[in-house]
Length: 74
Image (cartoon, rainbow, N blue to C red):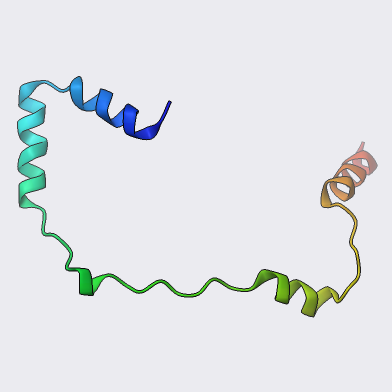
């Protein structure tokens, strides 16, 4: 089920008193001006970092490594 549908169903189940209280909270809320929103920073280039650290080496699948380590502990 989608999150929007869950929210809509939860709102429908509210009693009138609960709805009035939520409405009061929303009316008191101070909206954030658009200019106050922090600009999104560029995402780091993980592939470039991986190549800088490991070069062109092909590494084992990490799940295989973890499975082998767990087997050694048994």
